[in-house]
Image (cartoon, rainbow, N blue to C red; front, side):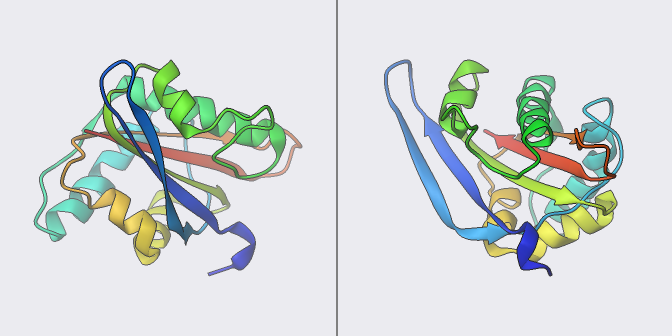
Length: 165
């Protein structure tokens, strides 16, 4: 795996209205690329997610349009900035995006960029302990996956996977 496209994953827990905390994970993730925007990335990814979780004795996750929207928002930001980051240049982090998208409970995000298909994307995330931990967390019941193509005309895709309880 290339060091160039590694990035840390993030997890958060948002309680009821006033309580929220951000828990960054200390591990990194690899970057990759794949097919379709938010248009059906979650539907296509469902079989990958179900196979991964089933092989590890876990229940299926449901594709969630709200989480897909949050993932697409982050993928578009990264594509326009031309870099992977959980935080935008104006300081909006994962916790604020989760709150803004009214996602409640525990949530996590994996991001990636590059030129791979869905199988390789998920294989690389599974090879990275913090990203694997996010995808195999038994508390998560839903997910949204989206990508945005590079704004500079290159063939890179910027991916975001948001998982939540």
